[in-house]
Length: 253
Length: 333
Ligand SMILES: Nc1ncnc2c1ncn2[C@@H]1O[C@H](COP(=O)(O)OP(=O)(O)O)[C@@H](O)[C@H]1O
Ligand SMILES: [Mg+2]
Image 1: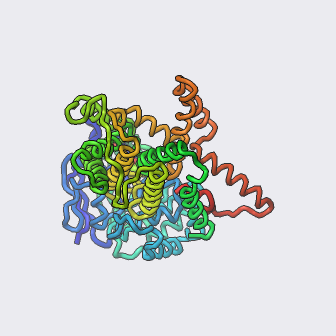
Image 2 (image 1 turned 120 degrees about the vertical axis):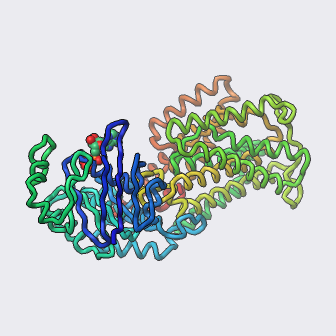
Image 3 (image 1 turned 180 degrees about the vertical axis):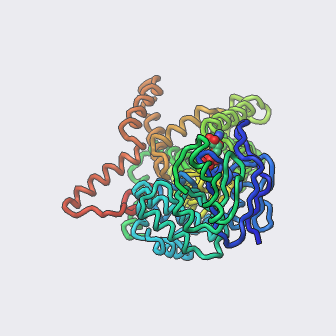
């Protein structure tokens, strides 16, 4: 059963066409990896799927419910959460406060105005559990600015996980990480239950092949190829896209 | 709450209540004015410091509150009803205008609120038949909540003080609630809040309306206090002064703007009794304050406070974790 369906999506920035007729199907439980050279339109596709940017044409549905054309905050209501390529955190708040905001977003009391935040014990407990599980508990009282880059990257991921999504979109989760942090993040993705469907943009081919069930190659705003990891690994044209074609290189197949 | 914090709040309330013991009659009047203006400036500080909405037309809501009392008191003399009417009217106008403005931000929001405020000013100025035009209107009803008319300066001081404390503690509760935290999150990073699933426009609209209501309430009290209103209450100059008071007092704190209001009103009062050129002197003073006080008076004060604190506990090791709000910090809100 497909959980996320992207159909014939077009998108341009002031006349510059960035996505051309993009269609994509992500099955429930799948680990789907999106690859392609810089500027291929991968991040833009995320923006379009979550409603961060309006699309020019096409339809996006999650679990049969159309979300394209709806305000961006509705994506979370249908179980979709995302991270950003460039850390997008509450820089002046503590780790714990960051997480509290993320968890409260999906609570029925998010709009209450008479009871202090810290009296909602379920909120505090969920935050504690997540922080302990991902080794950020010791750092809970630190302001984001005091974290290492890798820790910030991890927090970026936890904020998305906090809404208990069924569909998680990760935009280059390991970019800028040390090898050890990359390994930790890879383990994190591997250990996620199959009740969470993953769509991941990733450049590090070791990471790609250690998590992917299916890979889609985006090139010049079009879906170039979509298939099982073995098919992609052996494809000469994909190598060509990465090594030739004038696009910047950053990875080896 | 920690013991130290509770003690601080008790002291704060007690000080407000006991202040009349050391004040002259004139001092009482001046302090009442400070408290009313402080409520207004606090409401502006709420949207600037916690929601990131910098308005240059906030006097509109203060003026609406004052005009509501002045105009309706000619027909109705129930103070409760008049106060409620003022708050509701200001709230509705804030909500409806917010519906149109809230999507713009930064300089656009500033300009559009300025234009809106000036439009109301023009209406109050031109519609002489209703509003009294440039001459304004006298308010002859006395303030009476059913416990007898408030006539003395001392009695009115307690009304203003109670209203101020109520507003301050209501805002504290609001800011610590999920809605208040959400508003703060939006100021920090709106795009992330949206990605997390928050309807950020709704949050901003709510806090803007709340702020308008509080400004309207302050305006209503002011009409009783001053017994006279004029279009100046709606003018952008007044909005601009309130903005300066917020900045001077300390953006992003609750009490800062109130302290800024006290500074401004008292200084203006004293300096203007010596010279006609008081705006220049005030301007220079504020430039110095902002330059040396950094984030305003309240930050300056807390700097001094933490300096004293750290002197007291020299030798003790500093904690690795950031300090929790304690002592003076906790009053900042
Ligand atoms: N906000 C924007 N305005 C105009 N052009 C943009 C914007 N964001 C991205 N682009 C352009 O769109 C293309 C795709 O960018 P992006 O989606 O970030 O690619 P990727 O994530 O695959 O590296 C690039 O050519 C980029 O320059
Ligand atoms: Mg990208």
